[in-house]
Length: 432
Ligand SMILES: O=C(O)[C@H]1O[C@H](OP(=O)(O)OP(=O)(O)OC[C@H]2O[C@@H](n3ccc(=O)[nH]c3=O)[C@H](O)[C@@H]2O)[C@H](O)[C@@H](O)[C@H]1O
Image (tube, rainbow, N blue to C red):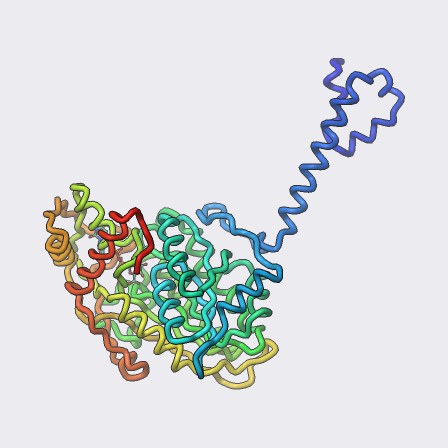
């Protein structure tokens, strides 16, 4: 037997230290001690890690590319949370904005703060796209006094803590796994954020006292293979073409359930291809801009029989107005102590621009603004979850919210290009 065989392999076995054999193995004792203390140290690290309040109590999807969340809690942290959520305007509201470092989240948070509402952000800063853009948006919001808590909507303990510290009147729920085509690559991340995360959030909201009113991001993609145009909220939404769409549709059904059982006031907003400054790099208008400037060829999808693929592109400022109007017209939730006391508001609105534009026209506008000709590669629309066209009927949002989009694609893209050039040529400095 080699003397290595006598070295205990677990701390339990290390109790053998008291055995008489140990005298014969004295030359091993220092090595054994080292091993013992290594195990103790490792054990302490593991205990600390698993008991840390920021660790996720629910099973997480290993395929999700979210980054480790930083720690939260403590008096200084609570003070920052309270101060960020403090309402400064008369009749203002206090809003928890999930996905606050995201594209729409950043714009909505800034607009609420400008009006004097209290805003607290929550974001997990995952790396679905360049997290440095999310950090730049965070820096922008920080300058206007908005604190973004770093954490995941699946972290029940964190959500409960936030509602303990602040009695939010509203939740603007924008945290989600976005992107239609990425759902084929990483389906688990859609289930994790758009379904499990949404349910976690609703669970915490239903038990909160008072219950907040919730406005959340659904998607135009729920219309899926619907061919009746323009898309109205009354049209069928039972033919999703992508898993992304299916999870957003599931969200609408989940919203119905929580409204029905717990009296939560819920408003779902079906956003139609939102674009603008500080946008998402995974979206076509954004990466077309990047590739055109680099001289790389871009792929433009076309429908069957050389048909055009078109989108009802909607400018971010119009979407922000729709979000704020939804918050302002949201009625209070009716439940308390996790029990429904009466019927509560349940709404779904299209927030689109009502004028679909072919993707080829989007490219022509970009070429004009960038003063660079694109290298185009035309390709048949792949079976990747994309639908050939979207077109919103917004009469319901117009009537109930006073929603009226005012920015056409030409004007909106001009603002986007101006931002893009200054952001990427100015050393990625966060500028307004
Ligand atoms: O309204 C929504 O609910 C969704 O809007 C957005 O999805 P989409 O409308 O698909 O936007 P986006 O990817 O920019 O493609 C735009 C157009 O370019 C075409 N497209 C795309 C890629 C490409 O290489 N070539 C191309 O022609 C493509 O076929 C399409 O016609 C959000 O990403 C999504 O998160 C969700 O919010």
